[in-house]
Structures are given as C-alpha cells and as structure tokens.
Image 1 (cartoon, rainbow, N blue to C red):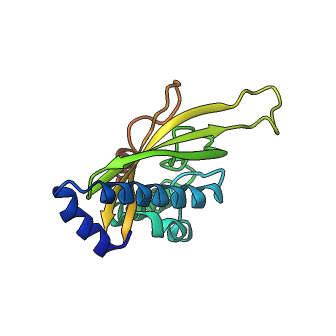
Image 2: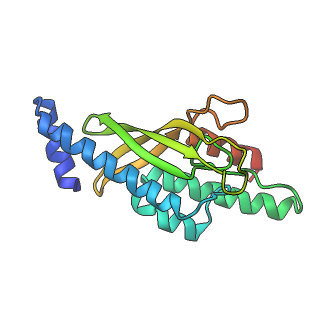
Length: 184
C-alpha cells in the first residue's frame, strides 16, 4: 500500500471502512513476507547485520528499526575495537526466538489499524540433515509493523520462545540493551 493509500485508509478507517483494514492486513503480510524472504537468504543469521546486510533488509524496515540496527552495528564495532578478543555483543540469530535461527517461516494472520499492526509468524528450525536424531523446533513470533509513507514496514519482533535459552522480549529491547552494554 502506498503512503497516499495509507493516509486515505487512515481517514476511511475512522469512518469504519472494512476494505481499508483488509488492504492493510495484506500490506502488513507483504512487508512481513518480504522481510522473512530476505532473512531466508542469510540463514544462519548471526548477530547484528552489517551495512550490506541492513541494505538488503531496508525496504522492509521502519526508519526507527533501521536506525536502531545501525546504532547497534556501530556499538558492536566500537566494542570489538576496544575489547579485542571479546565475543560480539549479540551472537546468534537476533531476528527469531531461536539462537540457531529458522529454516522455514509462514506469515499468518495480520491485524491492526491504519498506523500499526502485527502479524503472527510460524517459524521452524530443522537441522535433521546435519543431526538426523534431532527433532524440528517450531514456534510463533510476532512481527510488529508501522505504516510509513512508503507502505508497511517491520518495526519490531516479539520473541515467542517457550524454551529456556530462547530469545525473550522484543528485538528492539535486545538491541537497546546491547548498545547500552557496549559503552559506546
């Protein structure tokens, strides 16, 4: 959905037009699918993406999340320079609940209003090719989106891990914490 369409739907949604909500849900799903489509090319994802990685995600990221990822990458570089030999601020996959990432995704139901929305995403990690005895892991995360002048964009990810060592909370909180911990 274009920025102009988002603005028009915002006005019509106030008047109760259901068609705009349906278009909004489709736009949310498109943004989430685009984001995870890029994500699938990076598996396994490891830590905060560098500038080249962020550039590939950028068409699907809100300006706020893009800026936070850039600040996180800068903090990571400063930390690595100051503390040579230390592990990265964030290791493993930051875009899903699972440290090892996801090998499959399916964007589910999306809902929201003219400004913000969310989509449930069913994720799975299947490593039976390398470890035949392992069982696949399946879970749901939530993608939070915002309407921008360029259309719907991913603004945050809510981790849905139910296991002990999964990512918890939200991506933005994880990034803010890493930035603060970096001292840079």
